[in-house]
Image (tube, rainbow, N blue to C red):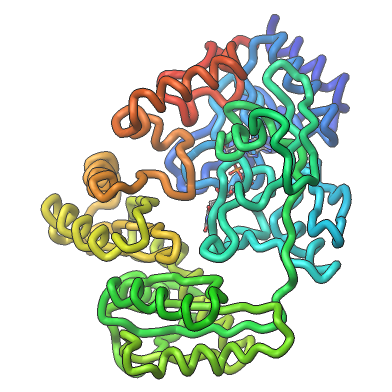
Length: 476
Ligand code: FAD
């Protein structure tokens, strides 16, 4: 069958407004965040409910078209990028909070709810949904689960995977798996839920989820600490976790280079201390207990002569805390102001972060001593964004042409330290080659078998995650 036949059936099933084909209308869905890939698609389908998602998948299967699910399109690995002949399935109209069960500490949200909307729905019943990071107003909970997103609070609450009880998923043949259970305990068979989390839409399309909620925090203390080196960050984190009975929610390491970029090119960022320091740590403690004095506790811990700190300041109010957070959150956009950059999202056991940074810096310097290392990130999770900015004055395109050379060297260092080459952003189109190069062959074989079992015709997000699973040539 031809593209017009598929488009005609999709339009009749979903409604004319729900199927976009005009180049101007589909252009925003083709855009890729980092400009690494040029997308294409025969159409964007925007069903309004689970049944509409199932119909879209079934019709695409009947016409041999591949389906690329898309949430907020904030992913950083090209996972939501489609190619000619594909249908992009946008979840944006599945944006209802289906139920909130405060006594169960659960909330059931449709996949297209933004992360900020989920946080807000939880806050309205005095609960916390703890997943959070800079793109929360744009990214969607379905995308967060499909990528097993991390963010700022993983240290205390875990990744997206740890925050889910149940899922509703549309399978590759258009059937709906209703696994929307609100149970804390359920050992009644294989854990299918976890298969779809982190699968980046290659095994099924998440349409709704039961999410775990937590008591809302009543107290918060935020500090910026200046340090000699990353080793001091690891030591301080251990001390603060002990001293606060594990109230540390956020622990973000920043090298001087990225912090200076935020101050130079970011919005509303100012030098935090009178002097310049080599490393900085943003720490935040939160507590739901009524009588806690977190700023007092944090001050006592940082004043301890055994604390490996150079200088520190604790935010006196919410505005000061926001100013400290801006220094961290403005690093990624500010890096653009410093020219082209090559990004690495790597992880190791927390204690190995210092040696990771040391060895990866040395490996990069061997390739080009003028590359600027921009290391920052979630040190409490062992996850560093080991980004590289082009040498000053260098040709951006020539620098980007070396993406694979640099990233391979950095990934090799992470792997030698028992780490991962894909910590929280996923694989997408960017890293299937690294899966093939670096992942255990047995693990790769199991991944291929799972893909073949759940998507035998390779129509769900082909070319992503699993090496050499390109799927059929699209022929709508
Ligand atoms: P998309 O980008 O639309 O899609 C991502 C992948 O999921 C694609 O493979 C897509 O096909 C698939 N997908 C989307 N929706 C579904 C669905 N309903 N069912 C099945 N598959 C689906 N990530 C972190 O983990 N931690 C961070 O701290 C972080 N910070 C960021 C900061 C900024 C400024 C930006 C721009 C991004 C950041 N990210 C971070 C990356 C990104 O926000 C996450 O990967 C996010 O989870 C993607 O959600 P999305 O809705 O935008 O998904």
